[in-house]
Image 1 (cartoon, helix red, strand yellow):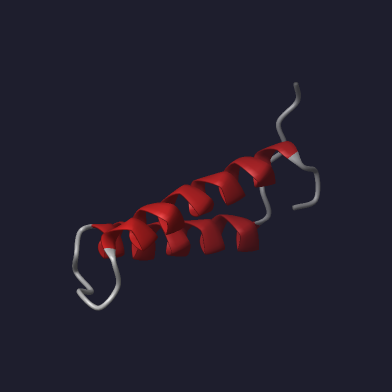
Image 2 (cartoon, helix red, strand yellow):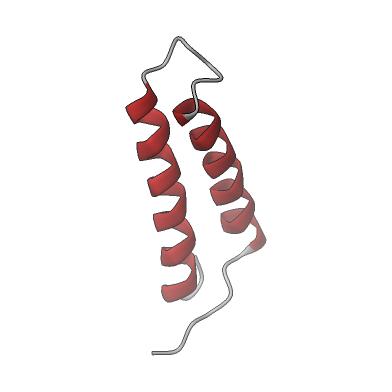
Length: 57
């Protein structure tokens, strides 16, 4: 399997979503349930992996 580097936009969006997700899961923003932060962090990781696998993402 050949991996492709993700585009800069994909990389930065996934990093931003991961940081927000971790902050939410640690309870920094108390108005949002913790589980949503965990889900957001996992989706950010999935976006980064898809950026590696799919060419042009």
